[in-house]
Image (cartoon, rainbow, N blue to C red; front, side, top):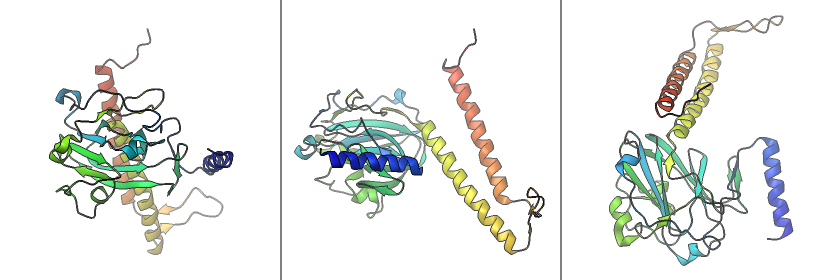
Length: 283
């Protein structure tokens, strides 16, 4: 790689960090199959006792091709805007996720950098996938060939029915030994990842942050509406802490409810950790 390109990538990362933009990157994790072929065990479904069926399970797999085998950098997989792994040729992995709408994205890196804010160097897919408790889902990645049929639960125009990452049925995944011929995507020093685990807590935290941002916007709109109706007292110039709405805000009630629900969730997590022996002792 030439020095100007390296310098440009470093400059872009520095500017993004200074501006406070969210930087999408997989530096040190994006090693492709050409440099580091997968070497894990052959595909096998994990046991039902290895995941909580109150949640959902997603298998990600990438079929074998010469194009993918010659890849220097592998694309990144994000769930709810958080990076978990880079998927190399002829590999599979899985994630246990919280039921509801999960946001799935794939980005192709350049020297580990993938984008910042709303800009992506190469966005492969950006889609919402609604998952149900106890269900298993299969996401197939292939740049060269597409599945023969669209998943019956998807609109034909859905991104996961038209992009290189496709939601497929179990029968489609098992057809022609595509999935069963893949190997487990190990995490190692050359290509670390954070897959093959439960990310339910991450999903719950992301949902809370998303909901609170939506409610904050809703609160601003409610206050603007009350101002127009003359139902908002502006603070006096000599006492900036006065003023406010003349009626209780509905958005404030929703915010309190969401905060209370999240606090309850946190207490439940603490109890679960204690029962699992993850608590700490002062002695």
